[in-house]
Amino acid sequence: MAETPMRVEINGSLEGHGHLRDDNEHGDGRMELVTDLITNEHGFPQHEVVLAMGNTSPPITTPEQGKEYKARSRQHLGLNVDVLVAMMGSDTTTVNQILEGYDRPAEERWIDALKIFQRGVSNDEGASISSVDAILPLLEELDRREIKIPILWHAERLIDDKGKQIPILEREDYAVARDIDKVVRTCDASITIEHASSRHTVAYVRNRWREGKKIYAGIAPQYFVRTHDDLFRNARFHSHELCWPIYKDEASQMTIILAALSGEECFYFGSDIACHIDDMTRPNGVKITSHGEVCGGLSQTPATAKSLVIEAFEDAALLDTWKLNAFLSGNGMARFGRTAKAKTVYERRDWQVPEEIEWETAHGKHHVVPFLGGSTRRWQRVA
Ligand SMILES: [Zn+2]
Image (cartoon, rainbow, N blue to C red; front, side):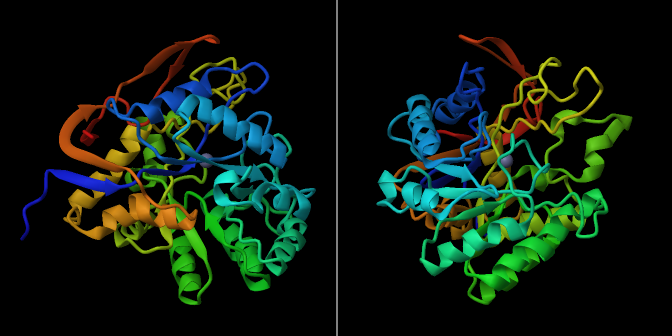
């Protein structure tokens, strides 16, 4: 058996699903924290390409907002970082908006993708769709005009077609079977099912890919290490680890890991990096409001996310294969029409995820409880 290399080299550095949330009017420090974490991974700037989801506050719903947001993000990330911006799709999004923002040379685009989810699934401030039928005419028209904008779909449904609430573990499967599949059967849209969590989603993506359909799954490494039961371990609810879609059972967990390890083109890394401020007074920055309501609030950091991926490849004795590169960088780069330029190097060297991150901005002092805080991770960036 080949000896496990103590270093791995990755061609390019990509974050396929990031949240640079902020309050645009006042700023609240969250964007700065995430961009600081991205640009300083063990002392090295991490990502050359960052896909920023547009559900910030206010949400990105027009190409002009996308252009402004892209410029603002690059002020924080550095002008050498290629920030791709997803515009939020809603019932009123028009073809002309997509053309204005997307139908340009790649490096001059105002928007680079269209993010879609159904009302109520995530924080949207009104920028979401009421049903798949509301967005289908737009997707058909884009297909007719051969505008291949990546569609990034948070595939979950809360309510079924008969008005009944869907069991929490089945929300993704329902959305894939009813909504994604309806689009796939109607037109040729290039869809990523974001942060895939179910083994059925992995099977669905593979099957469509075999039929020649450009359907992808974004994969976030928290799904490698958590199942739904972990949220309630030691008779406590670990609200800082809650995110949507909810973690599934061990069979799905294993399937998600194997999908990442496969290196197949249809699976790429998108860690869902985000910052949720640990502050009881904020309705969305917090885990538990003063009314006892719990919000999803996983704060994934880039350094943890990358280590989790490399650890999974190490555990499977697949470190010295092309597949790690494909999953972490190559597949996502290809998905967004980018080519890797930088080389990043990781070394097997233990480090501790901080229990808490405290930082100060012009907007005050903040606390974040990072995912897996206090744990030892095995891989860190060294170049
Ligand atoms: Zn997300």
